[in-house]
Image (cartoon, rainbow, N blue to C red; front, side, top):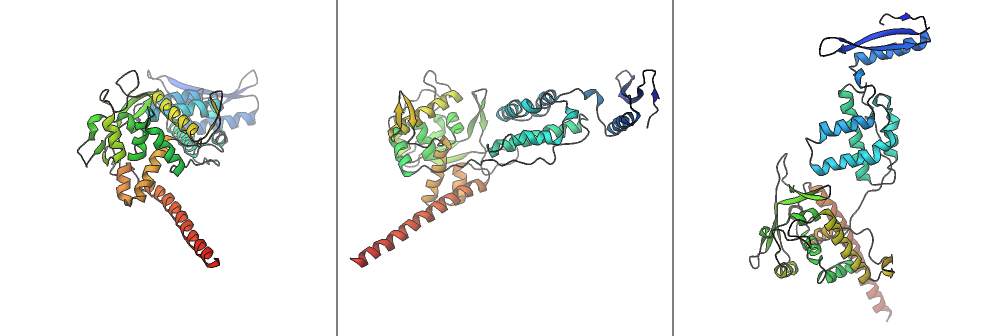
Length: 387
């Protein structure tokens, strides 16, 4: 323990060298307390922090301060814009409101757990992202000497809900196809339903990506977009042959109903889908409005109750999103007899487990359908036997 003394004011005092300035002057931190027991405890703690490489200059840095620094230093230069935006949103909405005001050196493990506990019952996917963000932030803080240890190592995910997608029901599919015939967003919907495109792939699709060779019509998917502050930015598409730093593409046969629809469509520019007022790419707002309009019209066509232009009782499940159309397409390909590897390629899944999970749902549905057929056969035979 370093030397200490008792001042005239009754306080015990000691000074610890914590480093040196650029011009060679000593940097010191002072420990003081009126009670000798408390003073010795504080002094031991300070000496231990010094041995562990703690940066005493950072003792006033708050979680909010460090989060900003961490984003700028470790994320902005190294991740895509959409990914950066996800980090920033989760910090701003879920981390800073709870612990942003606390100094980094005072953050306790239970505080990080409380941040996660606030997500109980919410999306599992986003909760995992918040956990990952916390772990990376506090690991980097430890490596930079801002904290004396990594306090994020044993975080536990609370109970969350895992989002699930399903194919459209027969009634939903019929209503979607019928509405697509005349709705201004019909071609866009059919592109996802018949070719399994992701919404962000439809935005980047160009006319020169489509081959209209009769009987062999295909489209090549080599681009998608990510949303940066609502605006689309082009990125590559990752497929089943993805390697580090390498993007891939896939070629998809176009279903006959979609071929006719494409041939009837006026070319307004490079892109297949454009805003009403320009020939550029769709924005995120355009996409949301297209889906909202189409889904509302399908809902009403299926029998939704409308009062003063507001739907008060839905006929179409509110959970349906554009990704349900892609899921439906994947299931249709399995029903047509395409094998797992081919469907993985057509869907552009980087991991075959994703395709396999959809196949499991397809198999369960097929078994249920087979069960209905078998039971129906025996019920019909029993009825014949009683006649």
